[in-house]
Every structure is written in structure tokens, then in C-alpha cells.
Length: 116
Image (cartoon, rainbow, N blue to C red; front, side, top):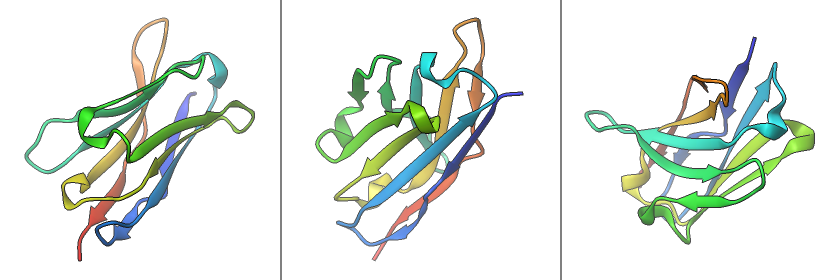
């Protein structure tokens, strides 16, 4: 069974930093593209950052220059380094692993709150 587990969320002041981690087990992690999504109350879930199995990255415009997605295949882990955080970044952050044979696997989410 595929498991996706996020960690690293918390409360941080504007301008601060957090590093989210997502550990994937039960499958061959290295062949998966991976994505970080976020959802604030009353808002649609949005894609924040994406990394392919080959390491190519993409970001939503609002986080470019502030967030960095990376992966360590030896640890079955994808990271989201978040710098210069803003109150608008407050959301539940989810890790997603799309199955190339169909369907997706989602983590439980981790809360990020940016507030003074």
C-alpha cells in the first residue's frame, strides 16, 4: 500500500522560513512526478510546486523566488523549502504522487500558519 506522509508545518512570523518534507513508501518513488498543493479555508486547492522524476521544477507565480521544491530519491522524500513567508501563504499543504497507471496518492496535509 502506498503511503504519503507530510511533516514540517507550523506557526511562523512573516519573513520566516519553513521546510516541509514528504516521505513516500510502498512504491518505486524515483519514477514518480511529485507535487505540493495548498488549500486555505473557503478557497480552491492550488498547485504550488511540481517536480518531475528527472528533477525539472515548476512553481505557481506567487511563490517564485521564495519556494524551492527538491527531491532525494535515496530517502524517498520530496521537500518544499519556503522562505520569506507571507500571511497569504497560510494554508494546509498537501503532497501528491500521481500514479502513472492512473489515480493519485495524497498525504494527510500539514498546517502552515504565517502570522505576527
